[in-house]
Image (cartoon, rainbow, N blue to C red; front, side, top):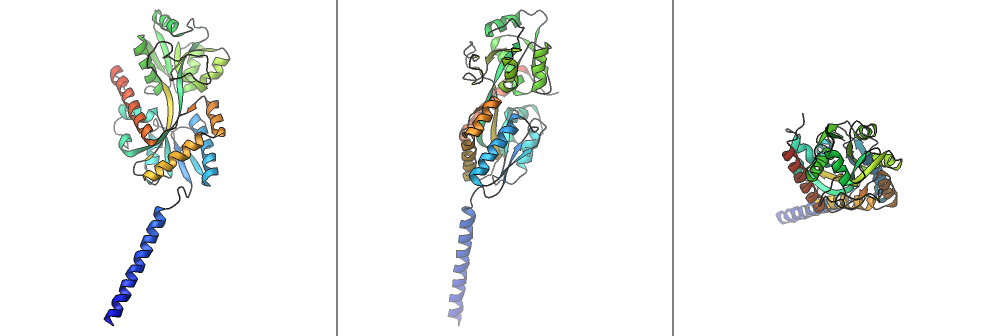
Length: 328
């Protein structure tokens, strides 16, 4: 009787073990994604990041059968959107757009609700948009040398517009001033349209801008492009030299977007996210939208993006400290 009971108990334990092992295998092998994902956009709807994210979402839905929900959470220079993503489970189903502000703001503000470099897991860089130095068509400057001389000769001082203190355009222009050996006063505006309009109207003398917002004005002959801040010439402005070609060795300045998720997401899911978004960026329908926005796909591995974020943080830190930049 006791022997029979012992055998029965052993059988029950073995059965339970098999069930648990089977269950564990099922969880481990769960298809990802097996339900809808969310991409948080830390900007207002209608911008380039929103447009590109929706195009990518359609490609991912076709490939996986799962929706990619675009959720706009603007405000706080990407802080609100990043924090919204970090409040979700670390399961890979919520990702967020990261931009230059993601690594700039932590250096300008205290008491953020998160530690970007500790709490965030890089997935991939998405695309880049070189800044282009533009002046009014009435300006005498037609190249970088003439621009530097024109600015240096201004008796009342030269000015440039930015999209706000601490933005990548502001910090990029401050680096440009430093390397060019010129002095210009920053005039911050709320958003790119206002900053560009300030050059068109003559309120300021120049600006750095993303290619997309100024391209129609350049094509219409209202603005003149002096040089672009990319490593290569911009596809939309093939006749405009880079700042490096114009004599500023090693200088680059750009707007960029990348994809992040929560630290703690399993590495296999981060790899799958990387593959999904990289493949989506290569599709013709996404490429055409990128071209229309004046941006270029720049995907890479999670490790590549992590290194890029570190390099960008250092670059911005150097200019913030050198120019003693603060947010009032």
